[in-house]
Image 1 (tube, rainbow, N blue to C red):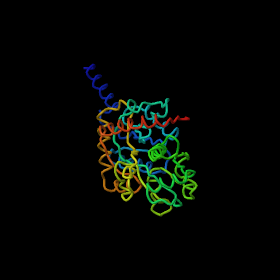
Image 2: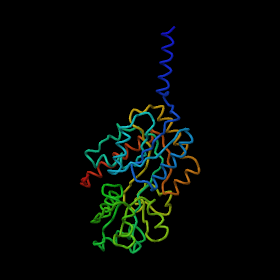
Image 3: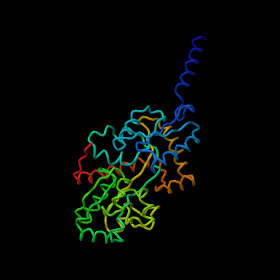
Image 4: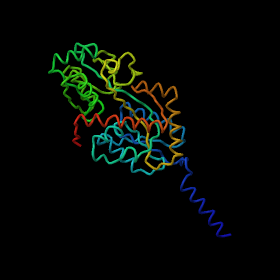
Length: 322
């Protein structure tokens, strides 16, 4: 009898220490690591999802901005976190599809160290010009840059970023000797773009759309396979005969070995949140397109984009300084 009672007690203690698969301890906070600074559009999306997750899961959900090394510091922190659904990564696609081709000592394997949960937003890059540039289309821009080779300079928010390579590919396919200037983020570049010191700048539409609407700059094209939901009147580079497609996105990931039941629960909760009409509207307002994929769909997207960037980076000859 004592042996049986002891077994029952031990089993009860074990069930208290280790919640059943697919369940969360209500008192345990879920931490979302966003590996970039607070205050931007993607940070706003992470906090929007966190707010709704807190309600749907019935547990505290916090967002931690763990910045450094182009997002790699935050990714490493999640890689080493317990695989119990208590820590998630809100990752940018560059961390999983572009950076592995740039950094030989990345510190993590995007495919082996993380489990996809759901892609929640996507975005293209925008090719913008100063209002001082006398061009109303991509074709007119190419003609003007070839006639003014000293002006064939473009800026991006940083070396080794999607905008850097998007501009490089635009120049290569457009037959330009296109020189690159790397800034420390888009805000640092805007004075030079507005003054005409640089003729062309490439960045995400979210950071440029208000200036475009005001007429301070002009967005001539985007880099999607189809027109952007937030810039439906702006053609793609492909529509202009320049075969450049640069997809970007943000998605949720968990550490490797997180139980499949937890991944499915989180996937379903996040998809339901993104499909809420008010959430959909708020995401569009900050310059992103809502997506809400399954884990399996995100895995395919990640692999396709990873394979897309390998040849481009290799052909560029770019060498990371970090």
